[in-house]
Length: 103
Image (cartoon, rainbow, N blue to C red):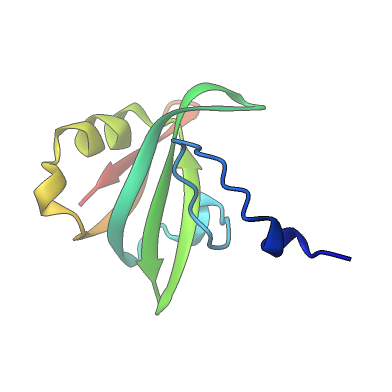
């Protein structure tokens, strides 16, 4: 019997997949992270237009989803040649909500 790997089936999928553990953004708050790359306009069960961010923290690569307009605006304007970059994500309570910012 053949193995699937012997069938040489290749499917072109233009979606980028980060093969690393998914964490909550709260796990990387107040930690220096190396932002490696991101994918925009991801649809999740929580809504459309989420971003998934791949970063390195404490020696391991992880990914997290965000819908933070502040983080998304920053990621959109960072030149692709400036990736990866170091940053810290801070959270600020404003009214009933939480705002995230790169520092």
